[in-house]
Image (cartoon, rainbow, N blue to C red; front, side, top):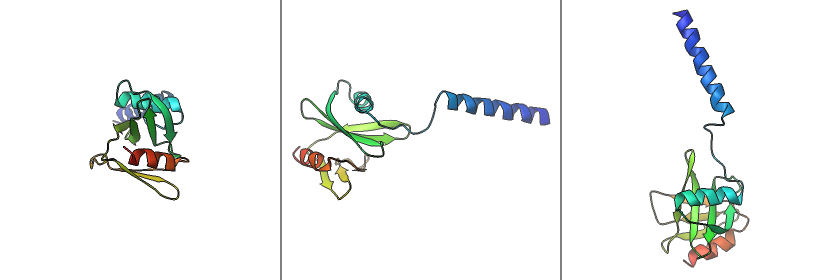
Amino acid sequence: MLLQFGGSLLAILALAGLAVLLKLGGQPILQTEGDVARAAGEVEDGFVPKRTSIARAGNAALARDASGRIMIVKQHGSKFAGRILSGESSAKEEVDALILDIGEARFGTVRLSLSDASYWADAINRL
């Protein structure tokens, strides 16, 4: 019985070590425009951002394509979820953040700490 327990414990530790080496799990982070472009492309095939802004925490971003469509991308578990914003969306600028309501209860309200929050608030509220 003790030998079986020891073998099981060793196997678990080996799998945990392998997961760490392969960088599996953990929370994804948006660090570059390329990260945002990849996440946006996964949300909607063919969406190519021309302007992006990444939240300071790296957990969300806004992206605008050449045709003026704006997409919000936010962390959802170990992946990113996103939506193309519509006229139902609204943005409110606060001292240190942009509060975005896309008009979809299931997606929720998103708070983004952005350096260019006023640009995005204006652009979103003009949709």
